[in-house]
Image 1 (cartoon, rainbow, N blue to C red):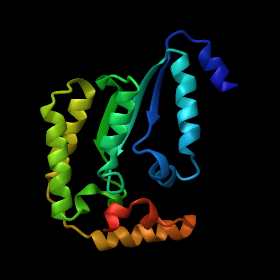
Image 2 (cartoon, rainbow, N blue to C red):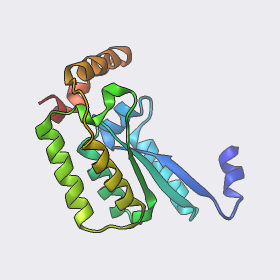
Image 3 (tube, rainbow, N blue to C red):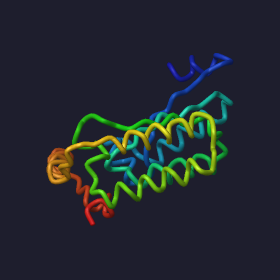
Length: 168
């Protein structure tokens, strides 16, 4: 009934939290289904309401966040539809724990995206994340993976099967 009430208003702005797609979405948004998310998004799009994607860049989506942005841009969403920030808590999901070689590839991808001058909120978010990942941190990827393993155990899920590149 809440959805029906919201649809009665002419000027609605939806802020949607989504950071990755498919199996990664279902892992991070435990209990959610990617296909359900897309169905709901399409339902909202038919209403011609404003939609903003609130996205957090973290250890698990260090690569796929970029694919997710490209996917939504491919659906016609404007560069002002993306609010991106770096996840700092919980610490075990902090992207800065990635090994330097992986973090350097993320930095390169961020710089490549920024060099295309997307402007708007998208560019602002990319610049903020780039600045954040350059800040020093005492890396402990083993701690991160151990905490993710605890989450796997609670959920009865295998993150290694979902985030294969992270574990390689």
